[in-house]
Image (tube, rainbow, N blue to C red; front, top):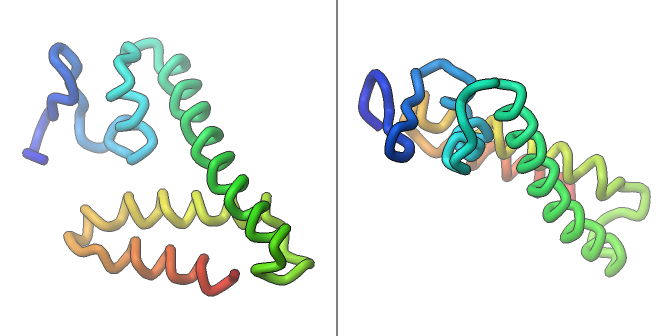
Length: 113
């Protein structure tokens, strides 16, 4: 990614440090939604995160049903925590210019299983 404005698609530019510079925000921006009003963009990002969390939850519920992790563990809570760890790792990795933040965050979540 080059410094300054970044082209995501023709006619759409993102300023570093804006909501669209975050992993979920980039996904919303790349969806083709207008940058304004921001409310629409936030709704799209939230919808995408809920969909992503749902997919993770489905997998964890299936694993839970097969007794692949402790019965007292909540697949719903683990799905949310996994997505939060993933998003944090995705945010930190390019800032630190190494994959370690993402690896550590996801390894920590996998260790909970």
